[in-house]
Amino acid sequence: MERRKRDRSAAETYRRRIRMVYLLFLVGFLLTSISKRFLAGAAAPEDKPLFAYYPYFVFEHYVRTILVGLGAYYTIRRAIALRGEVSRFRVVSLLSFVASLLVFMVAIPTLWGFTGDHFMGFSYLFMPFPWLSSVLHVAHTGATYRSSFVAVFGPDGIKIAIATYLAFQAFVWLPTLFYGRRWFCSMVCVFAGCHAETCGDALPLVPHDRKRPSSKIVHPRVRAALKALLALDLTGTLLAHAGLLTWLLGGRFFLSVEALLALEVARFLILDTFLLNLMWWSVGGRFYCYYCTPGFLLGLLGRAVGQQIETHHAGCTSCRLCNEACKMSIDVMAAAVARQPARSVYCVGCGQCVDACPQRALRYSTRFTRRRRGS
Image (cartoon, rainbow, N blue to C red; front, side, top):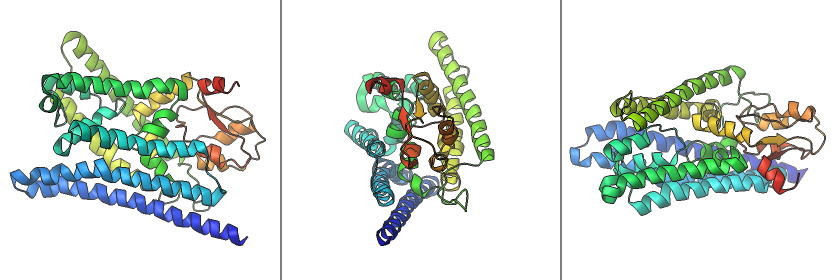
């Protein structure tokens, strides 16, 4: 009994440290925003980059990577304190996020010279289609959001940018054929996914259910609103890609590059910046995944390749722990009671429900992984 109390106390200590990691991220985000929006405006022209770009570069380049690493460490320690162990599945997810940030947000930009005011646009190439016109920008101007590939690489800069963009798309979409949505959303995503998992144990800061504060289930009305945002965002994505296709085939685009850029900046400020920070503490770490267009499309591909949560490995006791652990509010328990696999395009493959099940009745799999183990 005494040991159990110590373990619970240690778990609570690690949860507070995870919360502190998130708060440090929020402070860093606010400071870089203030520096870019206000201090840069008041600075002399020669000093503007010092306030407008370099704080953002340092924060995105190094600080976020350090915070994700700390969050991963404390999350692993908390799991060990609570259950005496942590699954290999979970450790792979957490460490993969750290590795992705080190590669895509630190190593490659540094080696290729995209630092300071060049960094912002270059980082957009490492996203699966959320920045819809990055290739169009490069083709027209040789740059993406102030990152000039021509200035860094010379005449071949445009080809290098497009090749980098396409290579990353292949890196995201091809492994999804084998491992489902888990590959990107719970291993590679350097935007919201890495913070959702490494800080998720402390989020939301305001519990959804005060009687069961550890529950991650999002209120149905909030889920409906987030899915409406997904429909809006998905429509914009399809329209932009349709316009991009007409430009590639006919040399014309129904929106100018400047108009598309303005729309995407507005989207970034509203959906990907303001809501991101508001909803992390009020809804939860995975709220963005409800209306993430690339994530939804990856989820559709995951369903096509047989992604599911297997539920038949032991008897379900209807304890609801799997449902309360799921940040995407999937009713895993209902599937387990019916002894049917839980399938959803919203499943990000994080494995939280698998770890939460005291009966060890659950397992994440795809058609490929089932074939590998012969089942």
